[in-house]
Image (cartoon, rainbow, N blue to C red; front, top):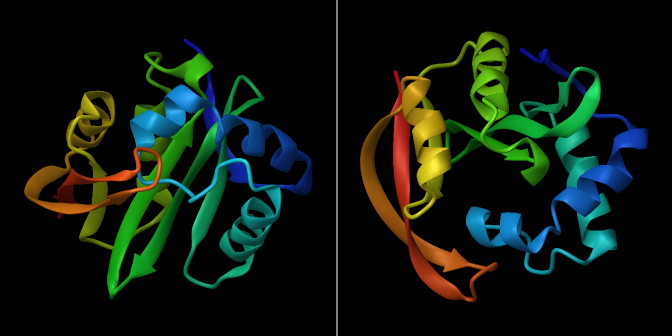
Length: 157
């Protein structure tokens, strides 16, 4: 099995991450994305903030040393949430599940929360396998779909 690891995001990752986060199929699946995935300036601002803001744990996900995506935790309205983005070429290989397990070791806060588009069965499966349970749903405007959609809210105690 491939080795999944987490490390700090470095400047050399940014071009590849930008490309990963503009993949049309991945953007549609994630749904709640940047307003314009092709806006490099906005991407760079967001990444700089993610990498320097206290309280955000932001890591590159690697598979056998190759960049496969990112994973992070952040505090919003007093609750710690997790989020991840795995390059489509690594989908279905357990990378997100392993990366989430590694992040949960780095982030001791509990409860942890997560959100996913309700029709994103793969991401919901990753979260539930990690012990997150569904606690409700919400709706919000999904930039990637140009519409209000339902998202599932999950918690790990």
